[in-house]
Image (cartoon, rainbow, N blue to C red; front, top):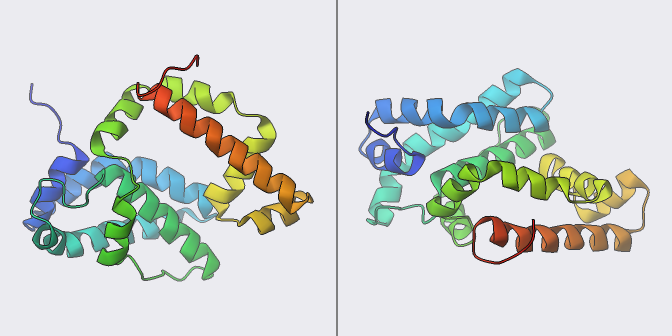
Amino acid sequence: MPEPPSADGLLTRIAERDASALAELYDLMAPGLLALAREILSSPKDAAAVVEDVFLWLFKEAPALRQHDASPDPIGASVAAWLTLSTRAAALGRRRAGGRVPRGHGLERLHRAAAWLPKSQAIRLLDERRELLKKVMRQLPEHQIEVLSLAVLEGCSETEIATRLSEPLGQVRTESRAALRFLRHRLRAVLGEWTANI
């Protein structure tokens, strides 16, 4: 039985204007992206519109990506990671814009982000070790999870989080930095790059 296509493998076909590859990528990624967009937007219709917009942008720009970088991985990072961050950004933008679809998925922005996005291999490892990753997340104190949720799912700044939680800004900064340090260290352990007792 042939191995199912990966998100990264489908990008080459999408760059060659293969609409069926876009449909395959949509089938592969859309359920998770819709779940993320629904966490941010209250309207399922708005969430679906955001995901559609991200895929349409990818289809439109894929040939330019291929011309810009002829390597097998023109995005320079996992397509899944890029789609996830693009969906989050578009959903937050739509919420801030009062339901309008924001424009701004630029090629330049995508390449700037690629330097710190996880690579395909890291995404595959994280997917294989999902239960371990969930265990790591459960180790965070509840308050730190709340702070990270406001930052990631609602796009709140540290100042906005402090206001929402009625806490001093310094405490919010301390909590968010402690959570990120913990996650960064444990993520390296999940990926097998660092030894830690999880």
